[in-house]
Image 1 (cartoon, rainbow, N blue to C red):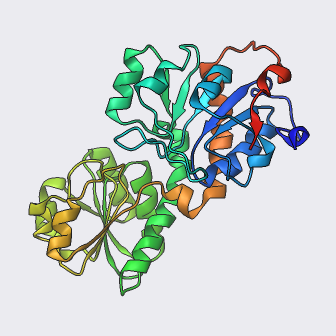
Image 2: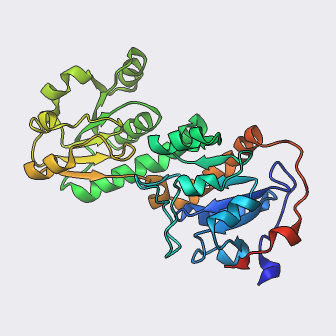
Length: 322
């Protein structure tokens, strides 16, 4: 099996001679890894021993091992939970990104992650490490907005007894994801109301044909909503707001964890409210993985030296096969 690892149709490029540690993740990584390998990268995996691509990479036994070997460390788009637990679908062993783990990462090795919680940002800053939040980039966010919008609408369709066509759908927030979501809903025939703060976004929503609602006026208007899609990472759907919603309305909260909804109060009122994190990896992992494979070469080029040593395969391949 050893000769099969990290082999394939390699094309010289920015990833040639680069050792990348891919740590945890979901189905996206099963599509991301082969694309990175095609571009010349050598992949060391942690928490991927049960992945469909396990026999094509080198598996590390510990966080210390990948930290010592890698030129860069790629964590999941989902990030970590509040304890530092890394999402890792294809392992039975927890991976924790905490102070002890960060101490093992050399300062010249950049850490890439979808989005980081404030406590992780502070720990990384204290240790002088470089943390790059990939999900915040325009190119990633715009391309991911399509599977995110489709996934949010799919969740709504499975949760309401009505069609999207003709529904009163509210989109809270009109950033990169909110814009794509509103446009997709309008294409399906929904009556879309957009809550946007800036005059520019309000003008764009109006130009698209959506109904614009000021955030300050939302409490007066939200009783019209049959489906509410929230993209604002702040407590927008508070108890006082939920008191004005119809109890048969459905909330799809696609803002970053913990979302912008008081889920406990919604439950008490009988309002169905669903948190929808990581939609691209759930509804379209192949597309989401290939999106990352398109953007990672340029991101890595920004944060790694242009001149790198050739891979010493004897030194790298000390780990066991997955």
